[in-house]
Image (tube, rainbow, N blue to C red; front, side):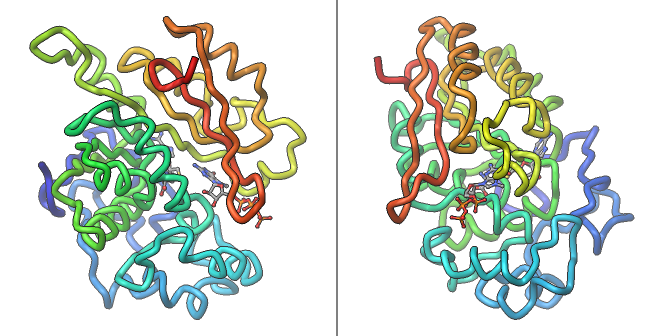
Length: 283
Ligand code: MGP
Ligand code: SAH
């Protein structure tokens, strides 16, 4: 399993350098990107100090204003229980990381057996990938943005699971193709389950009365169609108001035709939903 900067796999068509979140290193060659955490260079990413650093001094196009940051800051122990032990996150990480309790729950549902292999197609700061690894799986964790992978690698180290995660920097659509034909010796797919938590098009998703999958960026239907060529066992993490009709249409493309839609409640409030497909959907 891959461990460190030199070991992070790089998609040859990596677009990470074009992502505006890579401001400090925007001219860098992604193949030469330093994925390891450097406390001095990366001071702005240190989560326990974020209330002093982020907000009012935008470092990315997804800049959070002070008020929004404080909303996430107040919930920080729900995001990572080890947040004070060296967790790092950029601003997009703060608003998109899957809260630990939800990530742990989904990991236990999606993993069919110990030593299962899970593909985390949009790994971000590692909220899901870490919980899959803690639950005993091996994880392929993809993200387009090298800064996210720097965060995810460091965060995996904080939880002691970096040896169970192979980080791949690049576009899911490019990398997915390399998994299409992969089969184990007995002919079954090598990937046991896929975690999907793509960008929902920014915090504005909140105001849409019904969230349509095309509002994800990249398009949420296209993402699902790609996944079906790898594994039908999928957990799809989405806004709570996602169109149930569309999720049923996705299920119709699977062998089981089943989808289980689960509302995720934290602190007595429905936060998000997870749609389970394939063998993971309860009948
Ligand atoms: P939120 O926008 O903070 O809504 O997102 P909330 O918590 O209902 O707002 P509040 O009024 O209660 O403060 C809730 C959760 O959704 C976040 O913690 C993330 O886990 C997840 N999430 C939010 N966004 C914008 C994204 C996204 O773009 N992609 C993914 N994968 N998850 C997201
Ligand atoms: N589940 C993650 C959060 C994911 S946020 C966590 O718990 O931390 C969505 C991520 O998708 C972002 O980090 C973004 O950089 C990444 N992303 C966006 N487009 C992508 C693409 N085409 N391929 C791979 N990753 C992509």
